[in-house]
Image (cartoon, rainbow, N blue to C red; front, side):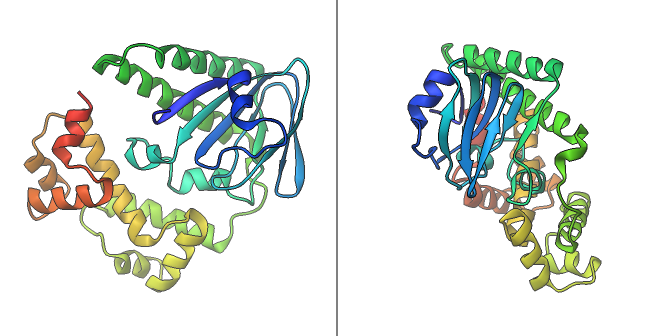
Length: 274
């Protein structure tokens, strides 16, 4: 499998076989089209029904306990690699905000919204079978992004999405990310953001690690990398122009920073998109 794929129930069950654990190297979202599925997680059974969408927590084990005879589902599976190489930021606060252990991980969608998602998933599955070309890859990724954004948009409308009030750490991380997105070009020092929040750098890192699983430094770098990937993929600006726009001293320091985090140069990243 490349970065992502769509499986129907037979393909999904081949990977997971009843009473066997789901593969931990994949992040899978399960869409129940028909019937019922019972999954065991965190010492409890989760019963999934028609139009339910289930989000397994990354790096956690799950078991399929049983399924109804009429089960029909689709599974969107993605590798952890895409969290670092995709233009969309799936590994930040929003992702963990929905899928950490203090949240409910299954939601029931309205029929119209669910069927719209199914249509996108089936289109993606079809496109993934086509011979890979520059334009086919664009279509594949755009469909993938559409599925992710449509899902998150629907979730954001559901009042039941939050099962507890935001903690102090939640609020700190949320404000930090707001500040970071506003000031990352001019300020990449953790102390700057800690001072704005009137807390220590150590406590800011503790909050970030607790809520997102990433340190303050890692989050700062991820925002810069995300901006770089957007500029490389959506503009014709030179590497030098991009490095200037992102406030690097020169294109070499930008190139070293980019390669350090993605194991690929900015030039090669851009070539891979063609």
